[in-house]
Length: 229
Ligand code: MN
Image 1 (cartoon, rainbow, N blue to C red):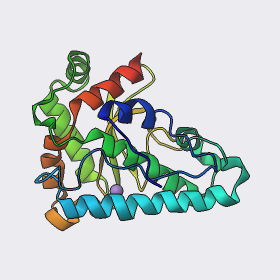
Image 2: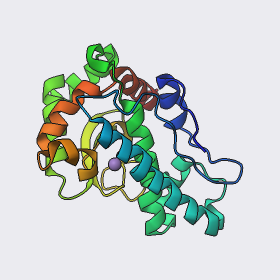
Image 3: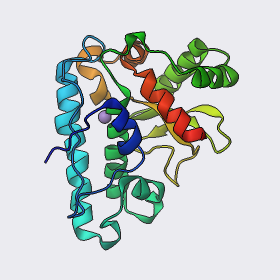
Image 4: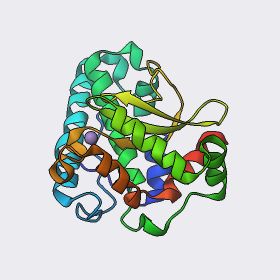
């Protein structure tokens, strides 16, 4: 079953904060709020299709396999599982992380995002923490390039609302109680090869640089407002 995301605002408000399982305890792959080719040429249609319908689906299926045989997982929402991930096994860690991270990621992207900019509040917070939006982007791209193997690069707000760039291995994220640097994700990019290899091959830096053209800053700004309120 595919659950519709409806609008970008709903992506930020509900999927990000409260990803409840269905009545039977199972999670579902969220439908994308845009077509697979909508992010061309930043992200090609084939990459989007495989990434969503194969990779993300597999995280959902494997997580559901664990839900079936694990009493403590039944009825838990995704964010609750992720925040308490040290209670669970590696299969749950990888696949609950994979489901959370990808749902968050799809919600950050929008084909019409080229004209969008951070809110005044987020722009100021970025300038306070990094000096400028361009300096932030460079630090974020560098952290993505520096992540060895597979993982994610994040912009997070820490418990005092200060912005930081961090990176996690595999499908970990900064919400997890096992994360080295914890905080609330504001923005995140997937630097697994499956996110870019068809178009960019080994050139991860080019993928990271071009990716900004698909970012929906309205959603990112909502995440920031939510994190610091
Ligand atoms: Mn991925």
